[in-house]
Image (cartoon, rainbow, N blue to C red; front, side):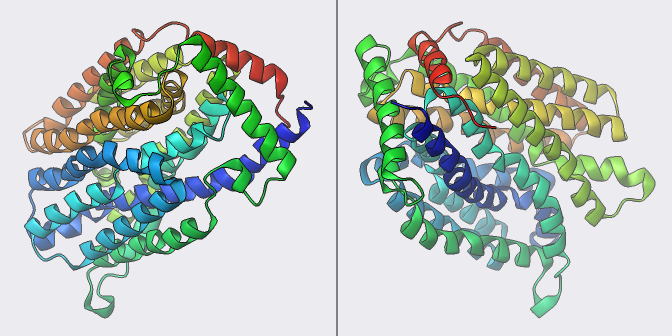
Length: 444
């Protein structure tokens, strides 16, 4: 079969499907981390200490972790269109209700419910893309989708600064406008997903019958080869018994602890770096975009390199080592030097995500993939629950910033070492990557 229809199908995915999924995750991440920009106003109005703010930031992940696997299994059962639509609608409603809180207890309760509502979204999209994208293009595709994480930081500062400037309009505090207006896109997009998101290639209006058939044939051939080799398991319990799945879960726990540990506090580090020059809170929010701008470039470069070489293990390990060393240098510095090193660490940590999330689909399929990917994300997001709480408590102490960054540097260094324990080669997956690359050259 000619590779032209497959090439056109992959171009269609990059032009139509990937930007839409990116938008959905961007909205999700803005609703998840906007409390980092609203922190000052929320803390002042609700009487939160730095430690109690850390609890509120982290409690999101408690609900997220508990409902992650059931949610992803439901997505695998009913289809991405229906379940992603439900997730968007529920988290949009909860995020909007945060504009009306009047106590710390309500704040914590809605943050917990926000995690429950969003559970299953990220692993669901990772599973969904594995059903659309051949192995040879998967790292850069996943990296393209996950660019929404640093882009939320890149755009979140300016957007949040603008919404916070509405302070006093209609008698509402700026942080209330922030929560309310950033929740509306999720509610609107829920109905767009219900009407427009195709579950499978043959349902996509932007693919011809020939293009959809070529894409589905390649994906089916990959699955047949993986199943025939015995290298991919499909049962949920069989998947959960895989040692590699447990290793990936522990590794992602360390990764998530690293980037969530400092992502919620970047505006604070920026404000401290700018304070000698008299930087305003608005300027601090704008400068907070710098670490995420570097992360966007790093994710694209590392994702493309991983696909080109067919290698994931060393891409993950090296990126995490760079992140750990950069945080170590941040501890020794202060002001703009500390901000620069934290920016490099942010970029390096995020850059490993594309190669990392390519690995599970190499040995998991069907319900094993649905449950396994969700399990990895659940374990990892325990770090999202604990890191902000621990960081908040440490940073209240004299010299606590340095102590907190030291802990994160050690965790990222441990993550780099754990990545080296992954199999050096992924067996048949490498062959699939090589074959797919030679059979389906990219159009530039």
